[in-house]
Image (cartoon, protein in one colour):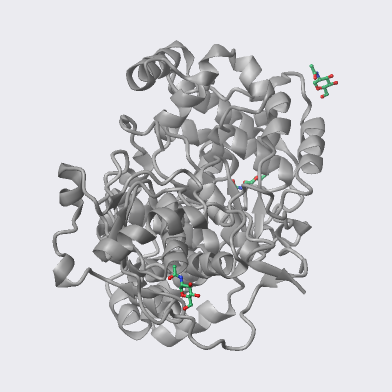
Length: 569
Ligand SMILES: *[C@@H]1O[C@H](CO)[C@@H](O)[C@H](O)[C@H]1NC(C)=O
Ligand SMILES: *[C@@H]1O[C@H](CO)[C@@H](O)[C@H](O)[C@H]1NC(C)=O
Ligand SMILES: *[C@@H]1O[C@H](CO)[C@@H](O)[C@H](O)[C@H]1NC(C)=O
């Protein structure tokens, strides 16, 4: 990403810290023997997970009950009262920009009032999985004999920029380029991104043996260069112009470009190092077997390392079985526990991917309701990073909004979800890095969806220790949980959004794509009634829930896997 060479994330989410503190105090007292037997007996089910969700669920729900007791107002007015109270609490917190809509969303008559029936989603077809659309991942007809070339043309070394999902696509393209050239692929090197600052290697993130094994009949892959090429390192290429470095690959280069420009280097030196490589292989006019190989790399060969998958499974269990804890507390016997666990009907959950950081807020040049101070801070940031040269800043906020060019705020995404029919019994997992404005900005969303969790609230501190501060591993965990959700919705376009839209299409899972062009004007209309808003939102999203969209020319095979990776049956 071009504009990401510097960032300053000055805001912290406070809730995680506060709750974590509470857990530390509560755990040893209340759960003296619960976790050790579980982690021995059933590592795959819970991985000894602390499932802090159980606590935060209770804390959230418990605090509501307490609120009732202290104040005893009629429940109908409680939400309004609460918003009024909270709005006054922090004069610097961003105000809900859509107060009338927001109040209606809090107030609306719930189709289902009870937590349990809401959780199993009996009230509507919102939670019904996507119908079979007749598209399946293409399977290779009968096991073809190994398609490995007789002789390798040499080694392909790749250096990948970007965050996790951009690197993921680069890896799949590297597999295709190695195939085009009959070369041996060296496990790609992941560069440290200046924004995300994560030095995790391919092997720290992806299961490298699985990767090599799945692709073993298609290309040769080695974990490291043989000794004779020891000199071909990142430092070697960083310090001078070198004959074995390919620096000039055009964006979306053709297969022929590689045959004409890289093959000769391979043939002369036995090695070619390609950097930069992101987005350097075209999506069009490639042989079908190359396209299929890219799909295979992305959807089958790339899986995360076991500890990420285990932690992901633990988080998914916490989301699906939030109240198991109550039954365990009484006795703590493993069999009773598993029994209760098996009988309980799993809850459904939505993953909301929310990227709302300062970079994005500043770059959009939109006004996010944080008042003068925020406006100034964003303008200053634009000046510092892009010397003020931001295309959007020549438009007014209203112009940008009417064109749907402003990222949705947490409040707006909350209103969208509420209008679609999700209510306060919906379990929401927030897949997010840091949110600009912190908890103050998220609070509007949390008021609409009090059962909101994230990796911080769900995982124990020991579980988090291995991934702490590692942006790629944190993103991998969110990716994994997102893949296992009933519904995925992304509030921010970008690589993570595209990768998950594509992967979930491949698995025919429900994915809601916000209709920005519709929502922009709706949010501008300050006299919009809740029922009109809701009707427009529902109608405007009927065909945006995961229906197959065929890839058009120039579009990414990883975002639109049909018809290249998927076959109509
Ligand atoms: C790669 O191998 C295939 C089959 O072994 C062959 O047809 C093709 O010409 C080779 N291409 C290159 C660039 O070596
Ligand atoms: C959900 O909303 C209903 C209706 O406004 C309210 O009675 C209930 O207490 C809310 N539940 C939670 C957990 O906030
Ligand atoms: C705003 O929405 C209302 C319906 O709630 C509609 O009657 C009105 O025309 C809209 N205003 C604009 C400017 O679109």
